Image 1 (cartoon, rainbow, N blue to C red):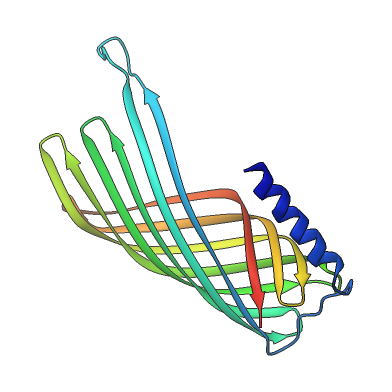
Image 2: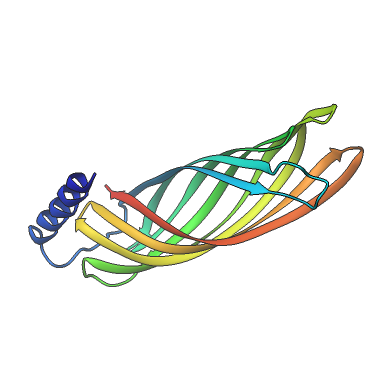
Length: 204
């Protein structure tokens, strides 16, 4: 593992010093990007003396987000991202499964002509999802929900050459979920959070 890490860093360094010190993104270029993540979280919880054994809760999340855009001006791109998320939460005898699909138009701006460029971006998307639950003698599935989200962020992009960048950033996102006929009641909830991002972008 250490050898692979050292090799990757060495290749980035070699590629980085083998190109001019400036990188320009021109109007008409195509932006291709994307991210994939899979996370697993396990928690042990207890609730008072009535619980003789601790309860193990697990959460597994898969997220896929391809993006495509076009630069409408030098260093300024507009495009669309498609985000798919599948989440499974298990605790005791109960399991929740949630899936969602978003279409997210976005705008992204880079600054400067150097290989290390600051960037900012923002997007607003709509989507649909469903939730299912099993356990404790009850079960339901395909509880549909309408989704709205926005995300803003920024960071630094290191251009290995004129067509490839490594990007490191931070992003804030906010999601509104509106459930339809959830136990015969229409309801909504919100969620928000801040996270770190890392990715590889292509400029064609």
